[in-house]
Image 1 (spheres, rainbow, N blue to C red):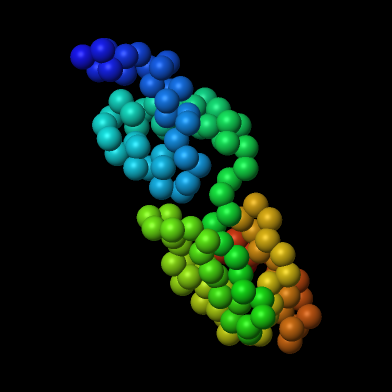
Image 2 (tube, rainbow, N blue to C red):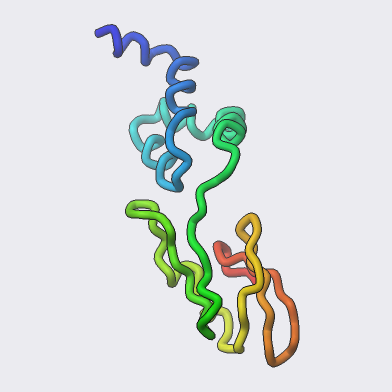
Length: 127
């Protein structure tokens, strides 16, 4: 009974939710609990505090640069594991390329045939 009454306090619940692990599945799974939790978790002020509290997002994975296909290799376990085909750079075109660097969700790609550098956003599939 005491726990139920404590969780009625939105400020206390926000403080508890703020400490959820910074994994990709944490906030979506918690927001599925009920409408009240979804409202708290999608509030822009809460999200700013959440990202400030955890500072550095988790490493989702790496691109293998020794092969010609540059496959994505997830570093997370299920349910946060990202399938390699989600970040498949070959789905855009079949030109030979290599990954040079990644920062903040963007990938710097060098096309060998055209000697071009391209910034790619593999999440939205935009080159």
